[in-house]
Image (tube, rainbow, N blue to C red; front, side, top):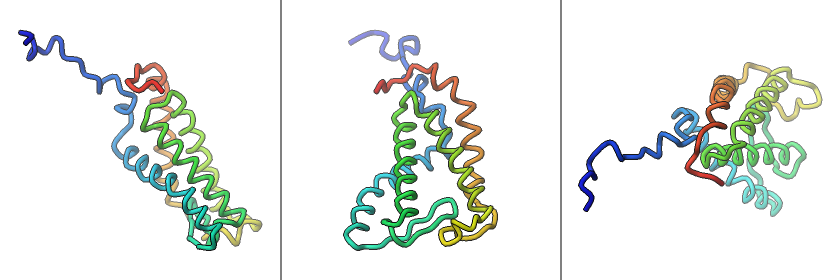
Length: 159
């Protein structure tokens, strides 16, 4: 048995090098929510093709049929958010860039829903302030702030 097993000198802290340690707890909660929602997207879409209808809503857009053009769009959006969540959780190098695109797209879609364009009127809930903007703006700001450290980090996960 090594004599220095309890010495702090030789103790490595793999958590310190993890990219995941750059992500705050509130983002980790949303990451898990969207990993689950993204994972449910394909089975829900297949059930929609089989005749079952589910209500889907995101960023002020809602549909009652997954097979409509807006239903497909929202399903793809949930799938993308699931992929971004997986990328952040598993510390992919491109995860922050994917997240920045996700945040900007979400903010733009919220603003479009708030403007209540006539061609989207049957799909938007209202033109009121979208509460999704409350976490989206800090999400974007946090991703921009950690981008440099994320890229420079020696992550334990290399795939």
